[in-house]
Length: 144
View 1 (tube, rainbow, N blue to C red):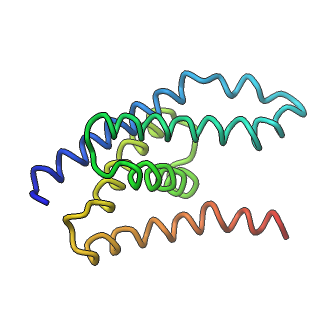
View 2: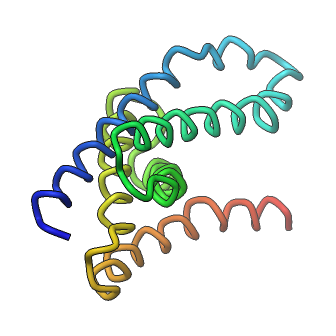
View 3: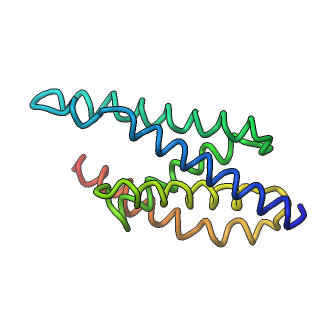
């Protein structure tokens, strides 16, 4: 894959991730979380909204002719979740939007077919560790 195509792929993915984050801003989830309704929001509504944002990014990637678009749409939200839960937090929306854009660009780079396998696996390993540390470990601790 030529460098120009790889840069274009990453920029398109970053814009798609940013637009998906902005779409999350439109959904009023925080108003739903009052009292016992927080359980419903946490278990049903929040994952559906995040899935909807990822589906929106996937559609935008497909419309922009990023091929294949589905790996970017799968790796992007996982990367966002790994970085937000371990490094930045959820407080500032613009930080979250920047993380979403960078994560989708990272996902486009890691899932590009033209790069050698070592150049795709090496940058993905820290994200896998962050995901295990920030997402999987708290789930396991909550279950114990």
